[in-house]
Image 1 (cartoon, rainbow, N blue to C red):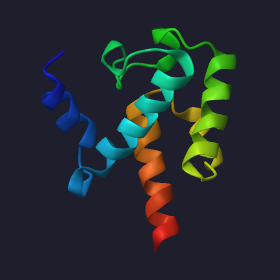
Image 2 (image 1 turned 30 degrees about the vertical axis):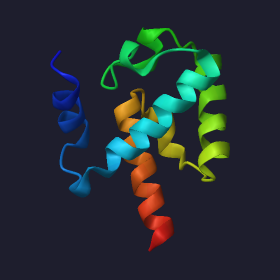
Image 3 (image 1 turned 120 degrees about the vertical axis):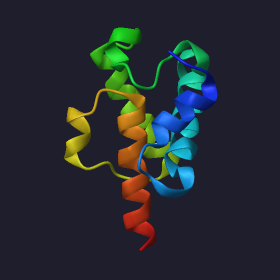
Image 4 (image 1 turned 60 degrees about the vertical axis):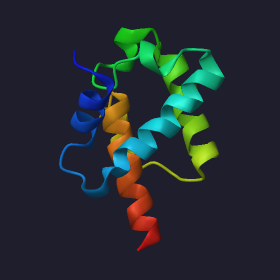
Length: 99
């Protein structure tokens, strides 16, 4: 599985500046507050449903993400099932909004 820094580097992948880590942190904070699940208990690269979030909880989580981060996720978010994937999508949406 690797250390947290290895996971962070893996999460950033090809994204410059590590912006995915920032969005991943936002997502982890929302999960901690909404579901009382510590971020260290979730692997950002495993499907969220395999980690205890059922489809209803996942839908509520996505609404919460859009509300708290003040953004609208494109329909492609429906094919994303990991926190790392969702963080990458959020980073892209934020970059497009900033442009």
